[in-house]
Length: 337
Image (cartoon, rainbow, N blue to C red; front, side, top):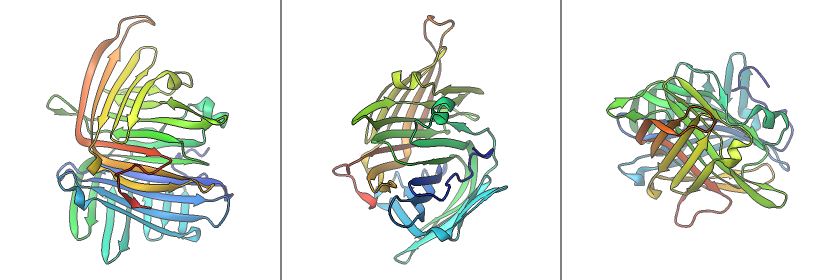
């Protein structure tokens, strides 16, 4: 694996997909944004690359946006040093993202910048990666960044200032059967807006041996300067997790730390899209960047000590949440079919 975990890993062979994305919520307007740069090399047919732009308006969900522009793979250009990925007129680097999509006379554009702060972290334990057990690898090159810039949504200009955001890179051969995911780095503790704090976790069911196994629930967090990587191969199978299209509840344990989370959203705040696996199967994903989250941290001394709550964090309308399954969810619109 390359030193920069953002760099493309595709070896030009079929059976691979790869994604780079940025999620953020504008602190002034409360608008949420999900911007994706993707490619897929199907087992049959020609590879393609795509730009995705999604926006969520918590005050008026009728203005939610889901747009996708697909192009031939020749429109995808990448660089390793310095890292960059370009699809058509859009680009993403370790320092920002820019681009635009036009459809039916409407224009959606973004010009964002940030400064890297933390080392890259991954949901997938090194043992599982080395053994090539995981069919998808999730890496967070920039789990906690402050974003400035401009986003245009069909003529409405949003001046983004100090938005807490995350930028991730993932790749693999097939998506899970079902999953819930959350990222948040815009928490409050009492009246204080926290810095140097983030959460990123996923809970997945995967097909194995003709049946569905799971949930497996790795979570990553940084709270008060402490890094919590609860991704051990045994622990992720034991972590408690329950999720659906509008919620995720989990409890993830390490030897001395425990995280308990509760994420919730409204169905009207979800933007539905369709993912295509390299083998032709589809996954139906429902995403929002305006969810709520409560996160509690418990510590204990010794292996059998009593758990003691040491932190209580909340995020109102600033958490990023995604639910997916292999059939469309009845009653939820798919903006990208």
